[in-house]
Length: 206
Image (cartoon, rainbow, N blue to C red):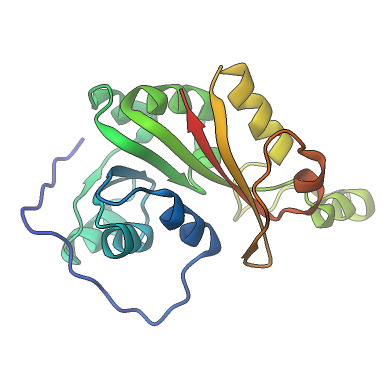
């Protein structure tokens, strides 16, 4: 895993773009001054938001060298690496939060990476696209299609809640998102979110 450490904090970058809905939810969850690892950090948009709004100490991990280079050139502390292999190198409880913002379901073995993340972080935050939303259901019924190749691997709210339960991780909070707006957090009653949430953000505790 390439080591790219920065001494100075990242400057606030003004892009003029609306933040992603799941990023907004995550920024409301992360505590001020928290230690955060953003896995699959991409262009660093969430990292910048957490630095600005939460005064968080944020590091990023991404497999794409071009994205890592862009992040570093913008003053962000990012390392290039494969989460399925390199997350193991971090010590236990090294971070307050490990974040997978639409990144976990892109991995070959999400459950194994989630298990490692639960060791490395005090909390794990995961946002997913909900394949159980009524629109994908209708597309499956009438077109016989479920996969959309630009999205995560198909996963429903109920699927992910079941995975957390099977791994003996507690869901401390779960927030549904539809049309860019958040709904009331859900926990025990999943059917409504499973049908009507386009996305969901989960906060998991080991």
